[in-house]
Image 1 (cartoon, each protein chain N blue to C red):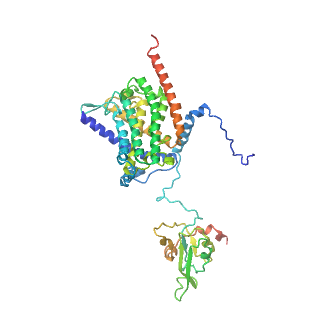
Image 2 (spheres, rainbow over the protein chains, first blue to last red; image 1 turned 120 degrees about the horizontal axis):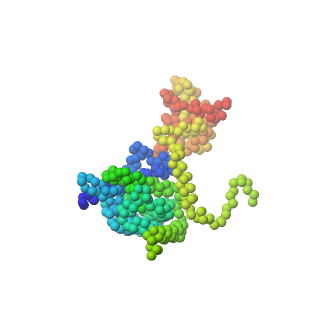
Image 3 (tube, helix red, strand yellow; image 1 turned 90 degrees about the vertical axis):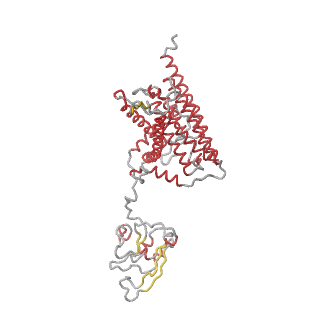
Length: 340
Length: 180
């Protein structure tokens, strides 16, 4: 049992790293396509070895720590960012049960009954990586980036949490497995909660520090923000953590709103075939959302800081609150709580 | 004030309508534009494999031509050096000895001829000044070097070899030379 989970965890670890690796490649390719360019095409066929070349470059660079930096925190920052990014993948249900060698294997490392709460918690810890990194660098730009990142995350976590609560209200469970199973076939949450989906997508972008909410990095005004002073593989860790988070966020969006491993016509299959097709469906959704996130990045310019706060506090939170209220009323009517 | 080009727009600071404040229509509009660009043809020329054809008027590295018998055209008259606005050209002349008729076309020739490629602005005035059709600018690029002294090109780099002459036929149809 333990061995089974260990193998599954290792596989998921490998897959997240692999996807994050090729997300960097895809990012550059998507950017190129959207701008009528070719993108990386020199390393290997179609430039497919580019991530390896990038990794080798990162490893071979000088590992530099500024004199006035807080040495231990400086080293800890990227570690925390990477650790929290990887930790989230533990509770994602990748597919229905797989039967191998007479054993039933659940394609989920841990089925917490409070899965979504765990995700929100780990996402909030994620900001520590950025904050500690920015603080330890002892650089004004890094500190600016870190402060912006933390305030942005606090602001957007509220709206995100409220939209998650609407989904939880509809399902009646905090477990991601239950939320997925409630969306059997084409019965996806996005058709019932389109507004919540849009709010959740915007908040995910903000939580990921992706454009148009990349206030924490801001190449053009903060010269890299919290990772200004970082180089070598420590910088690589930060960038990699961002792409892993992107992968996990896409997975969470797919699970909460697009039915996870459910796909239309899934009743025609059963057993292992269903499990494998479900995993394939989930990964297709994940890749699609990774693409959408990149697509948004290469379309929209960055928000100004005050606009960001306006959007978060004055628009998204009221919208998600009203949405939650209406959902609650509809659920109450359906269950006949007003009849008595 | 009256508009001259009819292209000016009147700027207004009226408050945004509700649809504009939603931002989403504008966001989707922008995303649709970028999406259309996904399927557009790119203009990239993959350089080392495919090379772009230079325009006939392109002015690159110089060549000192030989005539049809393989003799150097240059007579070291110095007109190119005078014409050069960047003062990149310098030369010393020498008298042709008996038995050197197969090397130099006329009685005087350049024993040393140098162009400083760091000074040269590739304006092509040396080519225009030359009365002997000796110097031409070609479509070749000047390669990069590590040392400044390597950019001073002597006769060894400038004079074309007898075996593979540099083709300048395209160059002939660009300037005033053809009309004469």
